[in-house]
Length: 468
Image (cartoon, rainbow, N blue to C red; front, side, top):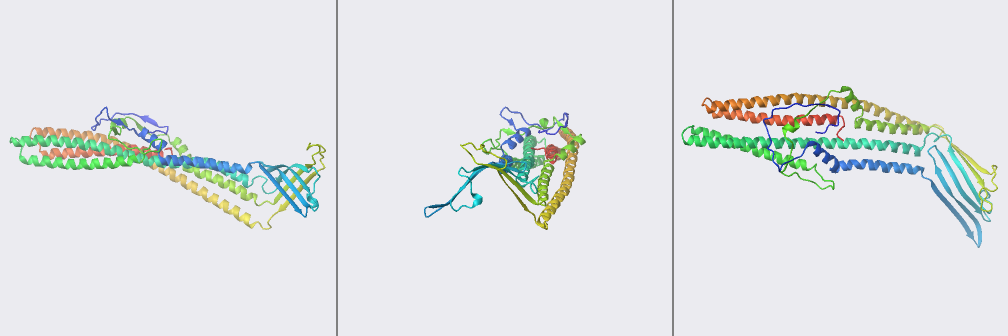
C-alpha cells in the first residue's frame, strides 16, 4: 500500500483460514498500482493539474504590467493649402519594479498655428528621462501588488491541487477496498456452497440406504439453498463494486478502462504481511502544520497582506515627479550639442482632504485578515482533531483485526470438533450447520475488518493531506 509517511513497519504472520486459489491466468491489481493509475490518468486528477496552468497564465498576465511599451502619436492639420500644425511624439516607456518609469523618445512640432509650447527646432527633439512617484506608489503600487499576488497564487494553486488530489484518492481508496472485500466474500460463499453441495449429496445417499434420517436431507437442502442465496448476493455486490471501481480506471489517453474477471485484488496474506504503525508524534505535528488546506489559507492571508500594504499606500498624497533631458539632434547625432541646461520637468500633487475612502478600505482589509487568521486557528484545531481521531480509529481497527484473526481460528476449531462429533453420531446436522454459519460469518467479519483497517490507514494519510 502507499506509504508517504515515514512510519515504522512491523511485520507479523497471521494464520489465514481464507485463501484465494492461485491461477496462472489471474492477475493481481495491488492498491499501490491502482492508486498510481488513478493519480496519473483520472480526469479529475488532470483537471487538478490545470490549476498550475491557470496560475502560470495569471503570473504571465501580471508580469505584463512591466512590459516595455512603444508609443507614437501623430497629429496634423491642413486647411486651404496651409499647414496649421504637425505634431509628432513617439518613443519607448519602460516601467521598473522599483516604481520608476524610464522614458525615451522623439518629438517634433511645427506649423503656422502651433501652440508655442509644442514648437520644436526643425530637427525635432530627442528626450530621455524618468518618472517617479515620490509619495503614493513609492513602495508599492497596483502593478507590483498584482505581481506579488500572482506569485503567491502559483503556490496557492499548488496547494489547491493537493487538496483536490487528496480528496480524489480518498474516494478512490474507498471504492478499492469495497471491491476487495466483495471479491473475498464471493470466495467465502463459493466455498460454503461447495461444502453444502457435498454434504447434501452425501446425506442424500446416506438417507437412501437408511444410515441417516430423511429429515437430515431436508435440513442439508435448506442450508444449501440459503448459502446459494448468500452467494448470489455476494456476486451482486461484487459486480456493483467492480462497476464503481471502473469509474476510477482510465488510461493515459483518457479512455475509460474496465476490470476483467482475470483481475483480482491481492490476497489476505499479501495485505497482512506488513502493518504500518504511527508513533512519531512530533513528526505528525509538523505534518499537520504543512497540511495543504492550512498552507492554502496562509497563502491567502499573504495575498491579503499585499492588499493591506497597497491600501495603506493610498493614505499618502499622490506626488509624481517627472524629468526629461532634451536635445536637438545635429548632423544625425542625438548627443551633439547636448547641454544639462536643456530639460523639461514637472510635478503633480493630489490628495483627498478626509481620506475616508482609503481609510475605510484599509480598515476593511485589516478586518478580513483578522477574520482569516481566526479561521486559520480554528481550521488547524479541526485538522489536528481529524488526524488524532483517524489515528485512534486505525489503532483500534489494528487491535480488532488481531482479535478477529484469533476468533476465526477458534471458530474453525469448533467446526472441526462439531464435525468429528457428528461423524461419530454424537451431534446433529443442525448443530454442524450452525457452527459452519458462525464460521462463515466470522470469515466475512474478518474480511470486512481487513478492509476497514486498510482504509483506516488511508484515512490517516488523508487527514494529514498526504494523498497527493
